[in-house]
Amino acid sequence: LGCLWVVATPIGHRDDLSARAIETLRAVAVIAAEDTRHSRPLLLHHNIDTPLIALHEHNERDAVEAIVRRMQGGEAVALISDAGTPLISDPGFRLVRAARAAGIRCIPVPGACAAIAALSVAGLPSDRFVFEGFLPPKAAARRSRLQELAGDARTLIFYESSHRVAESLADMRDVFGAGREAVLARELTKLFETVLGEPLGLLAARVTADPDQQRGECVILVAGRGEEADAKLAEGRRVFAILREELP
Ligand code: SAM
Picture 1 (cartoon, helix red, strand yellow):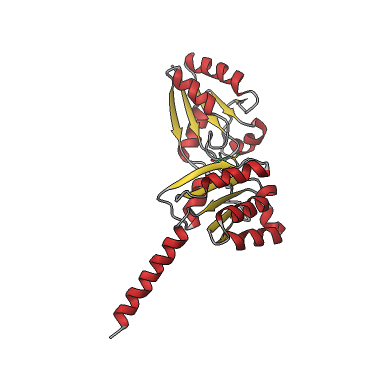
Picture 2 (cartoon, rainbow, N blue to C red):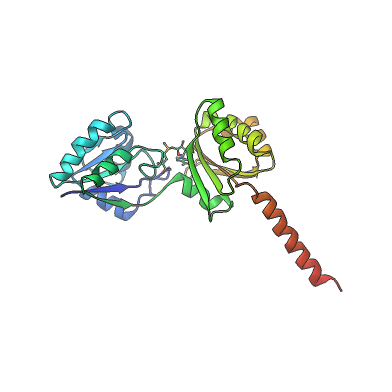
């Protein structure tokens, strides 16, 4: 029986491809890629000339069957997406599920993921978080999803497209409150990488006023409910402790 290697690729910087990922992508019989034209330059840069086949949203059902058959015939297959970790707001779920159902071993080759990269530099609580992926594009559905999340105490992580980022931040401000701490992580690992942390009111206003902040790819992170209150409490306690030391 063959196996399925699920390989993370860079989210921007092309050298964020691990040595093991390169070795794996060179060794497999075929690479299933979301967009073969998009992935070829990255693979060529790393001297990988393994044949590519397409596996995207629109052909996933049919492609899965053919790929599973190849693995049942003994071939090793790698799955990659356009950027980051496959299956994370990207195709691959059906393939992994079908492979596992067929008793085929699925092996992760971990690497970049925009949500985790953003969380690692946001400075928001990272012990508990929830990945929400993309919000619904329509305003009413987006707001009702946000409302469902308003009471969650965990850090919220969203993917958003650049042309909706201002709108989404404004909705978040309205639903979560202008004082809720948030971070916009844009163009991570790329030339114009920016990580802006501000209360939602200020962040929404800044992004609306500055078209440069509405370019490229971005992750929005929002502190869970109560975090601001907890932070103020902790700061109060810290100041009190200092004062107590100083007072006669
Ligand atoms: N599979 C990918 C991963 O592991 O992160 C995510 C793919 S999803 C189709 C693309 C979204 O991820 C973008 O709209 C953006 O929200 C986020 N993203 C991808 N690359 C990014 C980057 N370099 N900086 C910030 N966000 C990024």
